Amino acid sequence: MFLPIVAYGAPILRKVCKEIPEDHPGLPKLIEDMWETMYESNGVGLAAPQINRDIRLFVMDSIQIFENLEEDELDLYPDGPGIKQVFINAQIDELDGEEWAYNEGCLSIPKIREDVYRSESVTLSFLDENFQSHTKTFNGITARVILHEYDHIEGKLFIDYIKPLRKKLLQGKLNDISKGKIKVDYKMIFPK
Image (cartoon, rainbow, N blue to C red):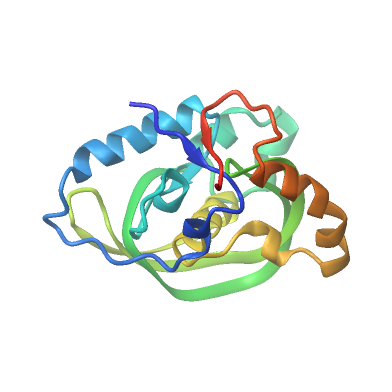
């Protein structure tokens, strides 16, 4: 089932999310709905706060990015062909490598893209959809998507990383998004 995306300005996007117990009601269906919502919205990642749930859950699929790269871009990122993964109760263990810029966007902040600097790699402890425990290191574009989605469960947004002057210049667009004065190809919930 396609779930509406929460728009910028909603308080839930600024909440630090709570851990999920293994017996969380309806979790398999919620994960299934998140995949459907992410793909229908043309996203590569989706976090629970974006669908109005304050739990530590996100899904991501960096395979799509590699499938859409031009032939001469394939060598730009070390993590091809990407991964598709569910992350439950994720915690960052370590950030490593040089910070690098990439033009990021967000389903909750449509039609705004900005260069954001993030670490080359991240080591993460998390549970998968079967509540199996993992500690893995991710790099390249996969690490970037994970860090973007991880920020969501910590109450952060990608625009928090841009310079204050640039953010001030975007304030009108951000206000329009929070007031619902934007047209997108997917259903959204706007703050009251």
